[in-house]
Amino acid sequence: MMNSPIISLERLNGVERKDTMEKIKDACENWGFFELVNHGIPHDLMDTLERLTKEHYRKCMEQRFKELVSSKGLDAVQTEVKDMDWESTFHVRHLPESNISELPDLSDEYRKVMKEFSVREENLTDELLDLLCENLGLEKGYLGKAFYGSRGPTFGTKVPHYPPCPNPEVGKGLPAHTDSGGIFLLFQEDKGSGLHLLRDDERIAPPPMLHSFEVNLRDQLEVITNGKYKSVEHRVIAQTNGTRMSIASFYNPGSDAVIYPAPELLEKETEEKTNVYPKFVFEEYMKIYAALKFQAKEPRFEALKA
Image (cartoon, rainbow, N blue to C red; front, side, top):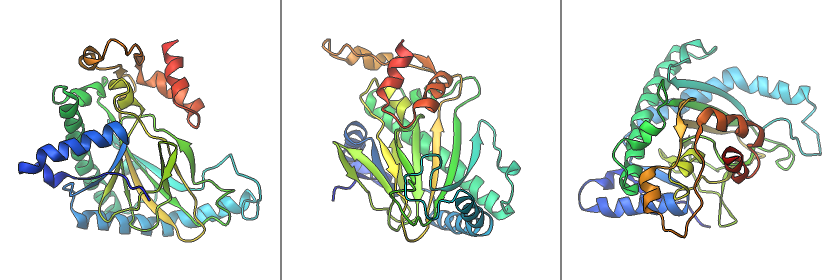
């Protein structure tokens, strides 16, 4: 089975830096995703966050999901369910301002650990974006500035659990789609993955690695790089046994950020390449994305050109 590229950030130091940058370049240009290890976020912090997340699900969310499934009569349904994803989830906003103090049911310890984790993830994301800038030949900080808007970027975390599904063909975990934003870091427990990625018309299910992140490039990076880097279609498959946990963090442009291909990259394009991605306010893209999320991404870009 084909696996996604594995990138170790500790290899950026010393003689292996050039080779590591080449691996990042290949992953961004030819895959749209990669597994990130040795990233600097303490493993004990990740372990604690995983434990607290599972405890919170069992205490506050598991029974609610069972009641929802029962109320909709989905336990024995035989036709595909299209009006709900087979997941139990909540969202945390970190930037431009945090809402974690407003969320119900979270313990003080969970809030504290989630906040520390988010700060470290934000720093890691900034580092990754600058590595992408280096490979693209853009000035350091260019991508961060492109996402900024008037109030800074949007950074948040989705915390989904995918409970056991009696019929995975009926209850889809999350249908195939590309993501709307900038860059995405997925921390998942190291057991059977329900994540499927599409590459060259082949579905790939990268096995989760302990203390790693699956990094996924999103639609706005495709626009800024004028297609040099592409967002990748992926889906989550519901499973019949066990509950799968993941912590998915997204770093997106601010709502009023103006997104367009980097002029420096357009200057490097060959004369034969005439396709240029559109210029738009991110909020405009999100309005179109909300209606067309589970369809091909190309019509979304074309709609903004029009």
